[in-house]
Length: 205
Image (tube, rainbow, N blue to C red; front, side, top):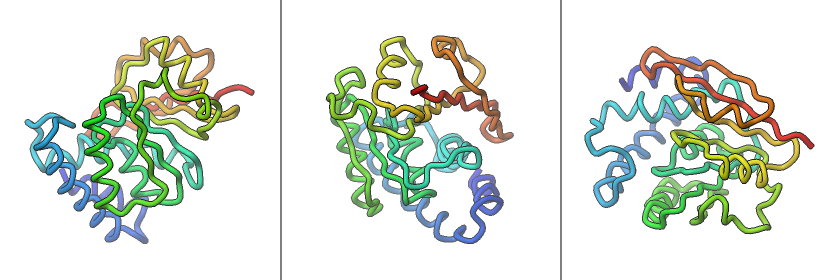
């Protein structure tokens, strides 16, 4: 499956393809190391499967969204995805990785350190408990593999600045999306990932 990941990078990031592939190889090694200590992703996932099921899936929207220089929140980051893969492709963004489970955040901090990622921060908190200083703070929010409860929807918009963009990674089930008034669906499906839709919500001023 690595070859499909490499094909995507060749198509969209040809000028820095070797550098990008090397960074993702480092990330995979660190992620698998941390996954032995705490369950970040299914331990039944084979090494070759990470490339499509996690890495390629995380970066599929990069051709449709602009994160350059933006302050981005990865809500429910788990093993650092999709935030870290996006950061590896767009190092100029400021990335905040949020998870309520301290052990997972500690593992992500080790990844950040070993990958030497700059302007990359972690937050241990439930979304609804985020401090007031984060109200209207983020230019963009990404969220993968999290069902959006009403309390999440409310607080995602709370911490997003007016005009900011929320990107939800979805497949076939879109039932939790209707709680947002206006949204656009971007189809980024890929043969090796399957059906993948990015739901884009812009916070009105």
